[in-house]
Length: 480
Image 1 (tube, one colour):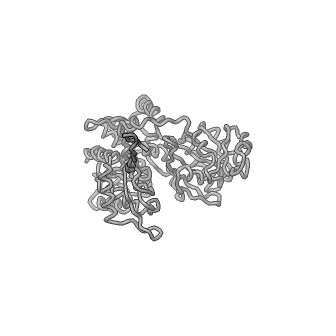
Image 2: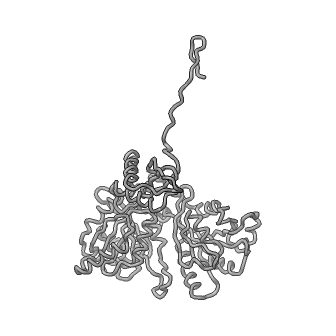
Image 3: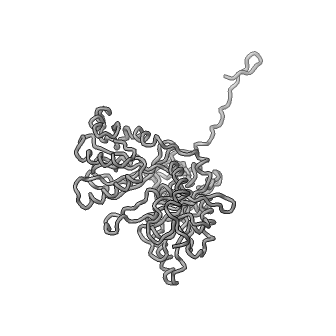
């Protein structure tokens, strides 16, 4: 235990009151639930515009949760695809039910997906009863209704008593926008200038790696409960901080952990609050425990940060307790298990004893400036020309790909759109090359540049004005 332990009542009186306000601004989480093979994974892929969820006609393919991000107009959201709920209490059905129960506790909106071809079945009624007890906003999506009258296709599911169902086709996208508008109707994102006013730094990592101790040391006050018991931080706690003349917001998140060590087949993380904190942050401090090994969970969390495009600083805690050979082992593990990270700063500290803590906030500040970097268009095009000269794009359909123009389209992370003929056919490997090249060129630390290819030439190039023809008439000139 470090310092005086705070009671839950003390914490609630201060930090949690502010958290309730902040929670209303967090990116909302939309969970997909339903029995197997009703189309949840297809809907997940449609909402996230990806193919991350495995889609198969075999029931029960999605056994672990999948997370992704989507966008409806100006409204971002996180979506969770869960395994199908089974009535039978077999091994996987029990694990899946545990995961869904956890999602119901943490998601703001639940989309209950049912099968319009099968109609209403007993399992749907059982799931509906469980959802009614969750106290969450529930929307019913009647999937596989291609070519049917929407009102007629959805009418059978009215008797579930969960509101008016929406007929959709997850495969074709019919009705999906209407469904999302209903799901996000109570969420209004803050204006961009308000959202970016205060740099936000999220501390993430496994339980008991020292996130709360580090938060307390950085703030200089015991604002967060610190304990040797894993999982003490049950929710994200936001703590304001001033450093070098700038106000910051530290977000200490709950540890990402296995639900049960007995269930080695499926890793089930309690990650929704952590995902929200990462999504809404500018910089993420990934806190690792030097006294153990760099494990699969550490790599998974690092992958979440990369997938959500946030700048990253790796903080290896409890460094003081290691002997020389142990330090060498940890450094080797960092290279082997986290090679995909975008050149982050790596700090070796002791939050308990204060070693090297003076390096943490300067590194976070540098990562923040990298995430919000403004890339001059002329300079960016010189960088594109240098990148192509160094490594030309691969041929497509036996034709060369000519990249002609690049411009910045966003920040946090920096987004660069590259225009050219057949640009949209560029393989992911070349887009990653361009991303790394731009990041190196502009000295961006811990930040991956998102490169989006677009077919065509410079969209901002103005057409030359047409010459105006004149004809003499009565000694005066007139435009034709």
